[in-house]
Every structure is written in structure tokens, then in C-alpha cells.
Length: 310
Image 1: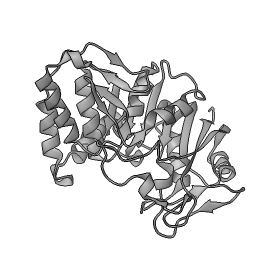
Image 2: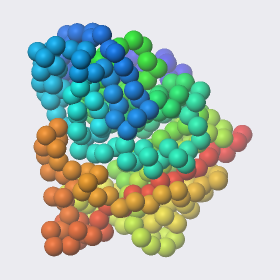
Image 3: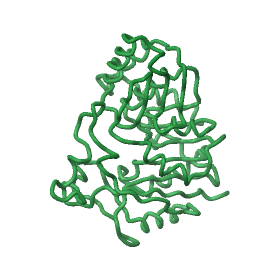
């Protein structure tokens, strides 16, 4: 059972030799006071915890400094005790595209693969999921989530674990809904990823897959020779018909394409909470429909499918 493996997996992930800042981040969260929280709003575009009136001016200033010490913030937006965490991604835009097509999450056990700092996990909880488990191997993302969870207070049934999908036991078939958003194109073996997602779902469970795609027909796939939009770890960008065929081959049923959206510099951009280069720096300066490598600019599609009933 996964519960038997988890303590060892988490202990290994939190080995301080893995990241030089880990001890500092853990100390920051341990010493974070438990504030009195007047509101928790998880079903709005901005995940809101507390209000500006809950803290003294000094406490709010200190909190903002602590939050910025966890830079860069990739996913959001959050409003934490009146502090607007304007992350690189307007993740609420993607959630708006997703939520109108999925089965209701009420009472469901949900897995969010590659969940980042847990923005979508909070939105899933706000949609009345029974429990949400996010997994992400990047420790900074996990620390950002733990910081926010402590600000939330109590014991909300939402967790982000420092793991990848390959750390889940094979064939666990435990989750009613599984999300994989912004992960697929980072996997060296897309078919293996689809099989891992399938095997994490209960029979008849629902997969929400969001990924980069290209225009084209059945069988067409872009495999960048080197970088894509300056990212090294981009492997397979299929056409929509190709990905639909992969879903079918991997045993998914009722597969459907529900959205295609070109990523804009309004949705992904640099902010004071993510000061590094962002999308505008990765597109061709004289032709924004191409990346700086001359490849098609980012276009994202959302697919929904069911695992086979046993």
C-alpha cells in the first residue's frame, strides 16, 4: 500500500542534501505564527486566506517579506491577509477553461500531478472535493504550499507531496479524478505517462489532461531538437488527433477535446513575484506566433477521458 511507502518516500525527498535552501524554508514555516483568519475563500479566481484587517501593519510587512523569500511564485493568484501574490501564471484562467467541462468534484478523491504550489489543489477543494492530493518533485513548490496551508489553519483535506507520478505504486487505482496539467510535454515517454495516469484512476474515473499541442493531423508530433521556448525539458508536442489516438491506445474511453487556447503574454508574464524571464522573452521578437527557436508558439489543449470500467 502507498501509505506504507510514504514515510520513507517523504523522508528521502526532504533530505537536506537535495537542496541548500530546504532547512531555511522549513524553519520559516515552523516559526510562522498561527494567525486568526477571518475568511477562507477557495472558490474564487483568487485564492483568499485572511484579510488585511486580520494583521497589524508590522505583521503584514513581515509576512510579505517572508512570502517573497520563497520567490519565484509561478502559480496563482493568491491574496493572503491582504497581500496580493501576483504569480507568473494567471492560473485562474486555465481553471475557468477546465472547470466547466469536468465532472463535479464533490465528494471525490482527487490527484493533481505536477501541481506546482497547489493553486489548483485549493480550487479543487473549493469545488468540494473529499480530499485533494497534489504531487510535485520541486521542493520550492512544496514549501510554498506548506506556507499557505499553515496560513489557512486547521487541517484542510489538501496535501502536496514532494513526489513524482513514478513514485506512486503501480496500479493503485485509487483516485476518482486525476489532473495532469502542464506535465505531459515534460515526460520523455508520453505513452508511459498516460498509462501511469490510467493506473492511478478507479475504474470509470476521469482524467483531465492539459498540454502543449501543435496544429496538424493524425500522427503528427513535434519533438524539438534542442530547446522549446528556451526550455530544455520539452519532448513531445502532438497534434490533437494524435493525442486522442494515444488516449484510445492506452485504454481510455469517451475521450474528447474540450478547449484549445493560445498562451498569451497576459496569461504568463514576469511580475514582482516572479522576476525572471517569462513568455515574452521566449517568443521571436519579430514574429510572436513563433518561439525564439522558430517553432510554433505555445498552444494548449484540454482533453477529458475516462478509464475503462472493470
